[in-house]
Amino acid sequence: MLTLYHFPNSRSSSIVWLLEELEVPYETTIVDIRRRDGTGRRDPANPHPHGKVPVIAHDGKIVFEIAAIALYLTDAFPEKNLGPRVGDAKRGEYLSWLAYRPGVLEPAIMMRFLKVAHVQGAMAWAEAGEVENVLNDALSTAKYFLGDAFSAADITLGGAINFLMGSKLLNKTQVLQEYCERITARPAYKRAIERDAQK
Image 1 (cartoon, rainbow, N blue to C red):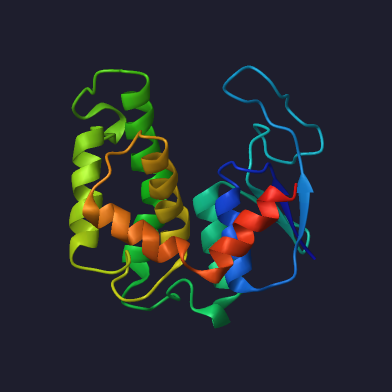
Image 2: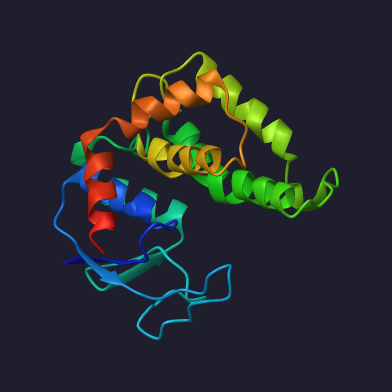
């Protein structure tokens, strides 16, 4: 059995969406998390080493962090073609975009939110405006991050773009707006939203 440790309307909602796209059996265990407003707690039922979500348990294995989970699941269930396989020409590009959300996008937006001045070269982070330019350039000539093929990168990174634009932490452009309309029109996205609303 595949279990997702989840908190509704959080980063782990992207993994709910991915699981709905994969159409594999899974169960969801809702755990508490520490929230920005000071509420919540570290839940002892959550196997994440920092008490965060998402985490999955699958066949006795624990996998945490969104990029790792997306890669693990698309490799474990390759028949849905949501991630290029080892040896595919698009594999490197796929891995790069999976890592871009936690490694580049989120730190840049957090620095913007906290009004922290960007220090060039610090921790290999990029400035938020530069990140926005990269995202807009990548999607200005392609439907998805891997071109014409929708992938888990569009769930993890695209889901973050959609959320951040809605939160006004990422500047809305026609390119990003049209991209988000494409990915959120998918039936699996709608099922994931409905599932979160029932929790």
